[in-house]
Amino acid sequence: MELRIALTLIALGLVPGCAIGQDNEADEGYAPEIEAGPAFDRDIHNQSTTYGASIGAEATVIQQWLELEADVTRLTGAGRSELGFEFLLKKPFTLSQNTELMLGLGPEVVRTTVNGVRTTPHSAEYLLDFQFWQTRNIGLYVEPGYGVGLGNSRGEHSFNASVGILLRW
Image (cartoon, rainbow, N blue to C red; front, side, top):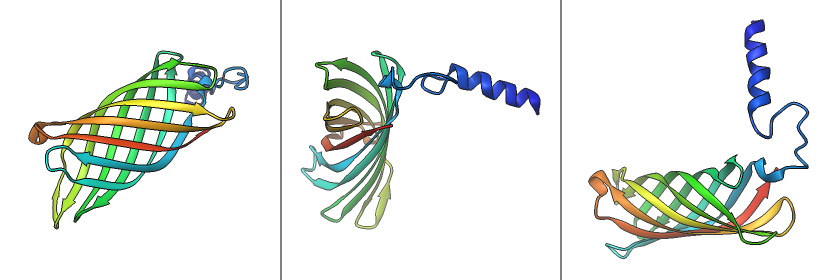
């Protein structure tokens, strides 16, 4: 039991932003972020559009080099509903004191129901993430993306976007 406690304390000391005695005020770059807002997806092949909402969490792994983002999106429209999950690796670029641009890439899995028939297509998601910080902990984001079907979904292409509010701890 004491070994588990010791290993837990060591692990907390190695995680950026969780280290004992670390001043988070000095380096807010490692603070986790939550984003939420409306979203849409336009399937290029069959010209259908779905609308809904997206919520995600983002964390910096390597300052100015790598951020990870996980999102859940719920979309509906024209007899179709989608529940999508994506995990993105993003490279941040600081454009100004209050503005960031990130280039992202990652897998996406979508549970799609069309007229009662369920499928689970997989795709690769490419996106741009523009973040505009209004205060230190509140901002806005615009995230246009492009999806390319993989596996059984090969040949499918879609354009998607979400916009909304960012909250930083």
